[in-house]
Amino acid sequence: MKEGIHPKSYRKVVFKDMSNDHMFICQSTVDTKETIKWEDGNDYPLFKLDISYKSHPFFTGQTMFVDTAGRIDKFKRRYQKKAD
Image 1 (cartoon, rainbow, N blue to C red):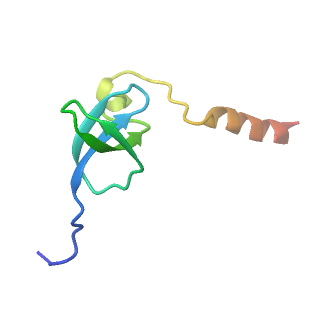
Image 2 (image 1 turned 120 degrees about the horizontal axis):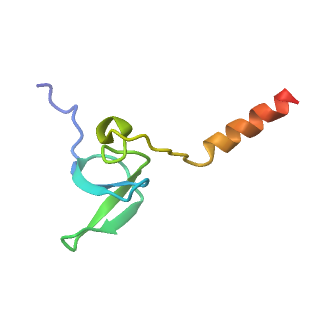
């Protein structure tokens, strides 16, 4: 394996699914600005996800409406003006 090409900043990071508040912890190099207190009492960096395996329709078998930041309303407003 080639030396010096892999990041050295691996650390435990908490990932939070914002659609259902499911959280899990794993090793990552993702940059974060927030922290959260985990079940073991330690503070870990927090990375917020729009969707994860606990809310994705492929894994759950259920359809789920996810509207992040009003994308549907923004789409309707944009094309309503052109239709008039």
